[in-house]
Length: 408
View 1 (cartoon, rainbow, N blue to C red):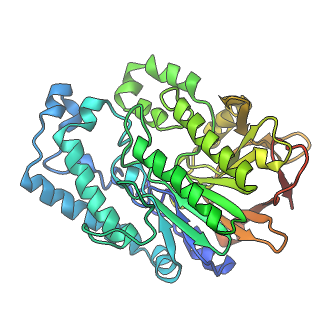
View 2 (view 1 turned 90 degrees about the horizontal axis):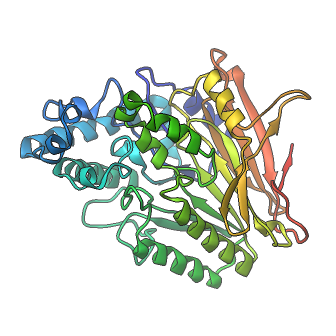
View 3 (view 1 turned 90 degrees about the vertical axis):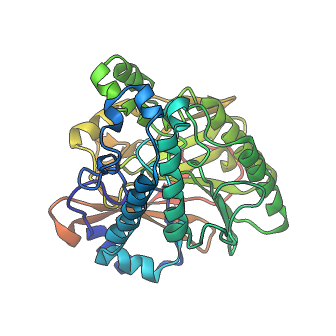
């Protein structure tokens, strides 16, 4: 979702959304709140001020006291109350069932991608416990002693699974167990594989995996080298944002494992798979193809929609991302991927939608999935909301290709 990261929340798309409904369900992929806004900054709480000014010893020995716990209780409760009581947001949340999975900003920026010492320190663990409590209350709708009935069996975190009239959805908790070199625990990987195996007892027309952070996006290796060489940027924890990505060297093997599991399921069950993601504050389509599969089951599209309320990147930043997106990625044995390049005119193309956006999915009678991004053009109001549409084709035998879709 990427709801807000500015002092002036923008509700234009929230107010516009009912006009293109009704919706059966709304999927929120993370960052439903921001605990680290300039005007609502968790690290400016009285008992957390100065935490980042000291060295590692200062941080790891910072006391997590009862008064700090009380401050955090008030902070997270009021964050949800403040953001979710905005009229446009409140209307959608009150009228449309939701699937919600958290990401780092629902805790604090980069949680899970810091050093092991920091992740294990009392302050990090204490903040996580409080954020987790309010995530359960507000996003999952349950107390601290229960879990929703949709919780995926045989795991210790908040992964959820749904089956909706031939559509299977897995919303995997990729934040609770995250470490600098780990996204999911062995137990969660085993539970996910077992869940996919259990789907053999039902008819599945299309499988959706919710991964807040895109599985296939820009390869940031060059950017990380730049950041690592600039001390000032490094102290701003930009490295931790880069380490969050599946394509980072620390997670590339885990991404390969994920894709192997998905392709095994797709080819065994003859079911198309699509990944849904957000996080990066732009829209786009990551494309993954496994060579040697003689059907479009070899193509997994990673649909990206972000953000609905947060500020989009500058046009210069989007242009740089587009240039960088021309690189292709080896994501495993016989698996390649990259960002799809949309042709906007005879002379221009782009790989990112650099505007606030949300995405609508609709299953059509022929089994295809209609995809529509609604893009906000600045300073033009609702009349400036533009659409970009495509269809993901149903299963089709024959040679696959790098983007198995049709454009409208």
